[in-house]
Amino acid sequence: MSTGQILFLGAVAGATIFLGLPIGRMQSVNPRVKSFLSAMATGILLFLLWDVITAAVQPVEGALQDGNDGRFFWLAALLAGGFAVGLLTLAVYDGWLRRRRSTALLGPGAASMAEFEIEQHLVSMSPSRWLAVFIATGIGLHNFAEGLAIGQSAAGGELSLALALIIGFSLHNATEGFGIVAPLTGDRELPSWGFLAMLGVIGGGPTFVGTLVGQAWVSTAVSVLFLALAAGSILYVVNELIAICGRFATKEIVLAGILLGLMLGFGTDFALVAVGA
Image 1 (cartoon, rainbow, N blue to C red):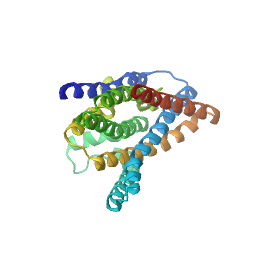
Image 2: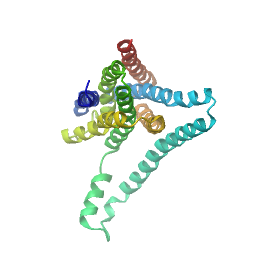
Image 3: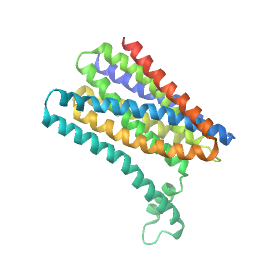
């Protein structure tokens, strides 16, 4: 299989994330239904958190088992540092947005009108839209690491494994698209198709980029770093989604949604294992 074919299939694997994005334009959704959908997205993200952490820890444990102390400490530092950055960066940025949103009506001051208009657009986005952007960012980091796995498998001549990963990740991404837009369902103002397309590019585009990088350059350290960044950002988003779900639905509805999301996540993972076998 040629490099161009592998890259094309990597792009297809990332593009399946667009399948779930139109749900973000659902209108007149009951708050309880919205909370259930958000809880289901939380379950999918909880599965991804487990999946990402498991994949990130494996090379660290491998270095420890091999007795390679230097490599172990290097990978462990990347794992811990990447997780902290992924978790805290989104929290700090979200806090900054909240503060800017509270002072957005004070006027442009000495800034140029162009800068002011851009800032007004950013801070005027609803919290649910920003949460969707944060979810897409976390999933994008995760998908970059998945793309690395596809590219590195192809570069190592393991084409059957690369194809199995492409099929499995395509299934994963189809459910991840729904997870991205779950906070948007039922919003008073429908998200534009352009906004949904942007979310898809943020979440799915890194799969293609990772495939491209993985074919040209094999690096366990880079994979661990991006998996750690993804894990931290996904944990932040899970915390935000659970808080939102609890406002509009009972604990039973929220837990049922999370359970269904977990089942969907593990179901696609089992499909990946079956294809690989």
